[in-house]
Length: 357
Ligand code: IPM
Ligand code: MG
Image (cartoon, rainbow, N blue to C red; front, top):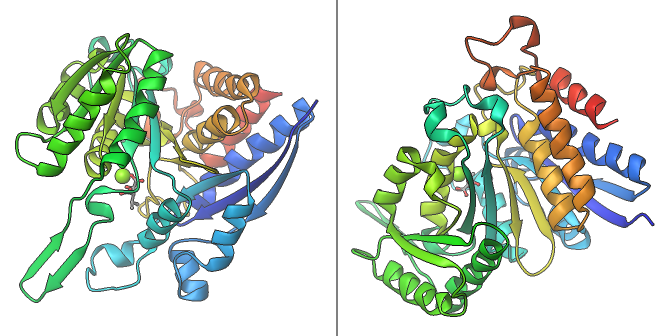
């Protein structure tokens, strides 16, 4: 029996417009092949929404999000804001607001390296081989949402965590560790920050509920170094919003390219799926962006929100097959890649669809 699901698609800004179409096409193909009924709606957010309505997250988009079973999101941001800190209305506010409004407190970022891409990373293959890390980044607290102050000559962002916020993300991370290699690394800056000392204390407490999982605590500076020195030592990593933002961009190099990494943001209700790459204005509109992160985000949706494990695996296998056939977008090509096999967004997406069928 097929399932009925309502999916909201929010392509957003920059290359989000180009790659999200492929995540959606993959979902359409899966629905056809497995007799599911996926109904799609579209919403606007970010710079495109500011242009259209003056608001980076229009109420209409938020309402559609609340009504949906899952959301496929593209990217947010526009060059014009990056160099003008004085602008008060900014695209990113839309993304932060939807995370908060939907209670998406846990951001899962799996760092999985396809063997075919061992050569695409700037890190040596022998260091990378076998790496498989699952990040749990807390997503609705920290300096992102603490009180902000600004005078002419002073500015501050409050780093704030409540016990319950650390508890709920830690539990999710431990539960995941149990299904994997049973190792959890909690990353903080407890040697300096009070918010991190609370973080560590809470994780130490939760650790007692999971004696079968080996717990390690690491300072963020050390973690940033260990991650590229010896990525294989990590299994599940749990950390706060800001540290997680930074560490997962770094970790994307383990997967070869930012263009390969998908993420799932979950909480108490609807799930939100997005590539971790941004809007990439430098290549937007050129048709060369890598659609695989959006396609892999769709795979995460099938698994996590809909419980369709076979379908999700099918998508991952199709991506793997495409890479095995040698096809590459620019970001994952290297000097050994045959030029004929380097392609743009649409050609690459089409190859994955062929492999799905
Ligand atoms: C991410 C992004 C966002 C963040 C930006 C676009 C607000 O970098 O999802 O990692 O900082 O969370
Ligand atoms: Mg980021």
